Length: 402
Image 1 (spheres, rainbow, N blue to C red):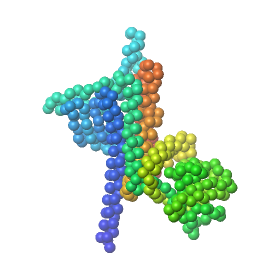
Image 2: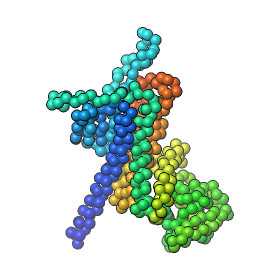
Image 3: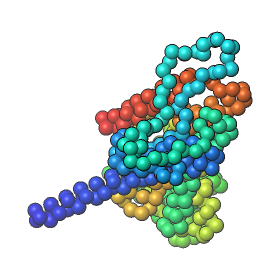
Image 4: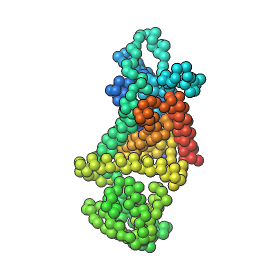
């Protein structure tokens, strides 16, 4: 008996460890794909690239290309990565100022180029060519914009591929209702046309992909209002009329209790249904857009106070949730990986200092003004942004833990 219990405990631990490892692999793959987007577009547009690195911290493996002189490295902290363009984080003095006039912040020390390494030990063994191309800030703004948005674009493309794979192999995620309440729970006094096992496909003409679609379709409707719904019952689509017993109002996008009361059911459980080829492609695009909208919506509700910080999560929470999903099966693995990919794509394009979206804004300003914002000021803004993002990530993780 003890041996059986120990074996079960060991299997549970190994499953948990495997889930965590898989979660880290998913995150690392998404970050690597993001940086590869920057890299490949930068190479095509003639940017000088010093290093492509997977992970942060000390290098556990590094190799400098004999052909291009670029350094490729794998580093010890597997939660990030970077593509180091020559001169991307360096400011430059405005030489167009009046002669003899010191530029602002003249005494501010120039930061080193990102992760620029002096190949002392390598130079002693053999010589490597200087990476070719132009410095990042010497390129025209439109080229820099293309490089900056390439990372998010690659994240979205990978996420879309995973969604198509999920829909084709497992099916489109939907929700199956359970109408009957347990004996220890008070059931609603109103009746619902829904039956246990029904899969709701549409509400008021809108296709449903996520819980937020249910909320959007019902929010603001009044008691006594009839809402047309389409359900999949016993393999056939059936049209029903749902009469609302009370006004429907949702506190936020996670207010599932109000949703269940509005539908008159006890629970909604995830299920899947396969579709035809063209439906799969169309639904995959729609699902990816829904994920992106959910990201923006959650941030909006966070700023307006509808959602608390405890509803968010940082790297630790992300790994925890991802490991649990990844260990649950193929569907959960693909679904959470797709969510992370779209989240990274959308989040990186937000106009927050240190993120690609904010850098795009600075490029647009330079394009319009025909001259850049002072590089020192831009560097300082991005530095403050990095500090804020790290602090925010730590804060939301602490709130989840305690």
